[in-house]
Image (cartoon, rainbow, N blue to C red; front, side):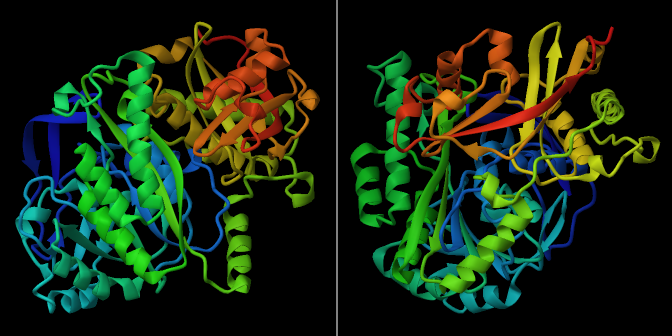
Length: 536
């Protein structure tokens, strides 16, 4: 049974105005999905496309060891989806026997324990996920720590919002979702003793939390004396301090930070439990992968903004042979993000004029169809899909309207066949580019489609080798990352220096950040082709 909502979206928060129930009551043995159509799409095809879009946009990081835990946000996908995509990209295609979600209750607190549901499965639009009932039974034997309060789980989104990403990232797995309240020291210690043996034992832990809810609208505005960029920088600094304690597994420092600042990190209880569990296991290294706030996407930092961060934890004590084999497996599935000529990854095939025209028609038909019905998919038998178009490649789709950018989304890794990447990125450029509203059917005749098929990116140390019109740029520094296509400096009339400043700005970095020793700069080239003129 799903819920259909009427809603108003504010910066970092969505208000429910009314709701109506549809469908028959599901079995009490199945946890019904309450957030479909509200926090994320209720249509299975649209949900799959949106989650896959966030996953394909994210970068695969080079991490040592086996990933055993994530810290992931849980806001609506419009706001938190790109950060969640970075988290889940790191485990895409991996095999875990079970996933233990450490969540929180947004509706109630003060019960001082951990609640778990003894149900058979959790429902989502993508299908039901089985619950590890044996583990649930085992946990509930420890009644001084684990209890079952069904009302806490009924409409809780902190766990539910993680599940579609898990479904699209992993193969078969079972689920245990735990709602963690504030635990006294005795209860916390016992919870750690019970759960820590599962770390690295075919189990993935996911702690669900957004970062600080800042602003007058949230009733938390300790930096109200600041404004403009100074306020934005201070909010970012405040959130990143929390992320630092999380990644460092510093439970005491995290608690001191909360006490000192009154920080409004909603998932502080599950986060504390996770970092204490991982600390006890030992040989765990945390990595902060991504961060931004809802107001960085849209909204007013002074009124309401909420921070979202992606943190992963890897067990570094695995045998070297296992880590090496796993890295090879992951590279085969996702591509090596730091491709170099020595890596062996070939450039994409050079497409003929006829093949280019096929892709443009495919994209045009897709755009016309999805703006009328988002579940539309072209009949592929009507297109001449040559072997070249079935090869995997990095690929971007750009939409312009009367000469102005209307959407641009792409794959930075060769994870899909070219024709599939065109379909996926046409959908994402139309509906998932956070800079623009969704494309309407009435706009389609005025939109021109451009497709860029990219070579593997190659690390560059001498910026004098950057060729305007030939090379695109990718920059990485910490969790800041940006990409500009080769045609961008040509369209803007930039020289090499302006191109370097532009890529820094795209990543949210200072203009000269490309000179930083910790910055990585990559080049790539593209086959670029587009419709001759905006269709009238």
